Image (cartoon, rainbow, N blue to C red; front, side):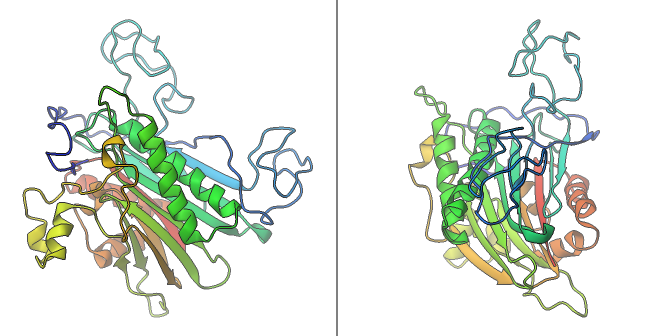
Length: 381
């Protein structure tokens, strides 16, 4: 990512990665994870896979292992995992095909490359993450879960986007851990009967703990940003969105501009934890603040060097609206090129949802693609 914590808080920036090819290789990927609890009363009494009986509080089918009630995805898949790399690809350095579980060639030690883009369509949310044109790897991550309700309508959607801090070691490990733990934390809290606002905060705390857990005593401290949302209200006409963030990954409500639009105006839902935002808080106009040399330096982030609880009073919020429109969660690889909500809405609501998610990524690539790009779109209709 282009944002880094202040220089006095993290090690000096490493040498930038060399430019890479702009060729894209779109790849869909859905990552199975250890199934969490899901809200009671939102599923039938039979496994959707094998039709075996399941109890109201069962997390997965005892007969076939199918996760009950939740469809989920996490991107990108780690190199070396099934689906993380299409086929037994050859090493870019020595043409060998024997890689260890972490994706390193056993012959020469070269890390196997990943596809440039991963996508997932969960129906209620559409995910895309792209390496961009300048980075040698994707340090972003995105995960989501859709809990189905009666009649086939979604009951709850949980989304998390994270952007690894490039000045830390193994930032992709931090972002991957954050999105998976964040989704699990939200679902578990909802299953315990907590409100969406409390559940989205529980997901943030779970992500914080997960990122801190991968640090090592020698100062190795992977770091990342975090933004998440829980959507409820399907079938009622009014949607409740609870959101949480640390860092400068963002959530936006983007209204479809039409004669029948009744939802609230397009707007940014989250507040950045950045030096630019600090300047704005002290009276500097946003355009001037974003021109500052330290504009993207983070004031808060997730990592072992961020404190046990990096959250602030502004990190959790609620928003209620009617459709039509979309909820957008994204890394700064997108909003760096178009930060205004109305301008983003013109792209995000101008096509069907998966094509709209792709178009947001393509827009960032056409604008320079200097960072990893991640978007998640949830329709509000």
